[in-house]
Length: 265
Image (tube, rainbow, N blue to C red):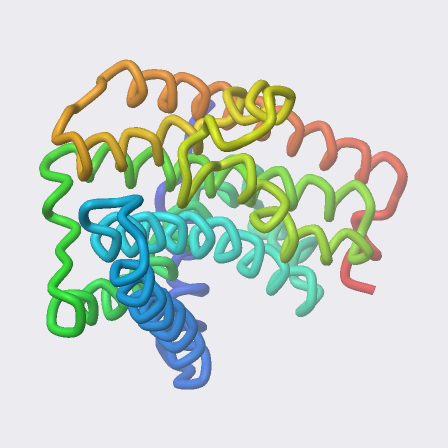
């Protein structure tokens, strides 16, 4: 299957200019991550003075908060880009180009990354002067952790978009609640052993638990467990492939039922 990168680039530019030419959109991207990271930083400082659970509570909890925020921003960013097409009733117009489903997905994947980084970088820069925390403490393995989170965030975005194609705008609320539903099983701020045994089995089916367990392992024990990293990568690409297949299936069903035309209604 031949991919036309000019079409991908053109669609990427559409969303890029939509974001960068609107000050309210940029402010919204920067404001919430910055407020969340700052709030968690002060909460972590308080926790550090009242508990010995972590030797460096501020560093561990704030680092996990930043990693989780990147995951959240990636997932919600993909959903928002797709919803922009639905709200503007532009989704069906894209195929006049013509443009392939694969090209739409790829363009949204890269635009979601730009959107997430616009919000994340200022928040990361705040942590050093305010709390003396640097994500560089995770070393080269930081890239692998962010890659896993990025892939999983995109996977969730594609799954939610599949639901939007299949069930219409009524599925929009799932776009906002997906990450909050998975957060308890991701073991973001606590070890997986805290969960009941049944919940642990669910947690181990998600790449999140391996990512955050590895982050704590590096920060607390200064030990790198490549098994956690590899398991997260394997699970991520399995779920990513499954989500893409589901997206194609949902698109096919929506087209056959004729609901694709009214998707923006």
